[in-house]
View 1: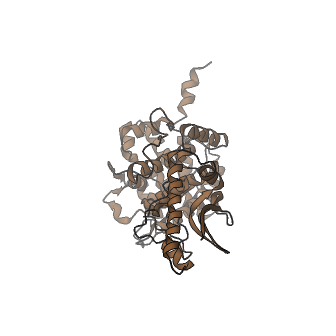
View 2: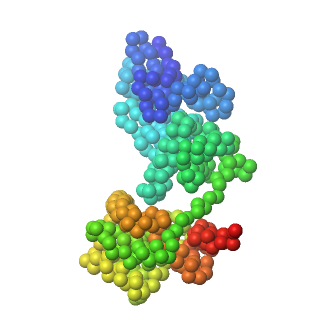
View 3: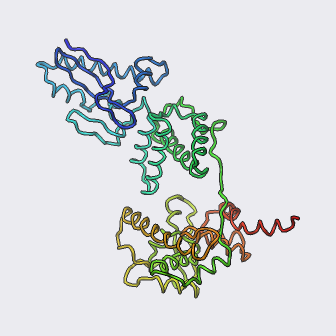
Length: 428
């Protein structure tokens, strides 16, 4: 009569220090393994050796015992015994009450050695590994490529901080320690906050939408728990004379330098839009003496109150359009083809941004600017000029495409540090 046991199969080490948790059948000299899921040695020790008494560990052991019973029943019913058929019956998914234990977001090998990557199947409910939750979240949500990349980065950072991290490890003390360690290692507050917001979004999804996290889980971001700080970094901006020197600059050594400067000026004159908006800007968005556009960032972050930006085509804006425009393409810059996909756009944008910023850096050095000239500074420079010109907060917010005056107030609150010199002139 064969014996069936739950074992951690350490013959093959997987990523994140995990191994296969398997049912091992010993039938005389014949040994076979049925892989259930992946777990670390530490998790195996806690659940099966120390036999921790928390509800999730108890449920997990009960589920595994159910698998052993299933193996014993199948062996007694299968006459004559056939290993291949036994595997097929064990992993058969129709009406299988134990399915959730061996089908997870990362997939495991089925009876034929084929990885199961059906992300509509239940995630591993007992372990609730943060890695699994992040992978499932990325696979199910409709996210932009850049957003997916950032969420994957967050997943990797969390896993590096604590390999085998589970939902139940994410507590207010853990989050406070995570924040401290990342800041101590040189991460900016903005970067740390972005990681924590991603983590919060994933937890919220599996608590409120997919509901795989138990109701007794103590949500770490609740009132009295951990709170992500509100942070508005101080922006350093070019002076009016420096902006003018960039616009009037003629000492180019290459055509690429001139093109980079012209792109910066276009963004500056076009209400400080982002480069992504210029790259996808079409000729048919020009209506009379105006460019009508919606910021790409707005389309992906807002469902309501999406404002269209109206750019008046004055003499200066017309000069930029005429100099950079490609009339043989439906797109003003002529760098995209009709029907482009997201991958093409992201790759093209990334490549062009790198080249343009490299050339802007060279111009910045020649002009000895107080801050590095980059594509991103065109937006800050536009807002700064409007503010210095006495335009109201509401007017500036409207031109920038902000959703409300609070956003504009925070944005302008970190601009124009030149005023600090004027204020401190009264000092002795």
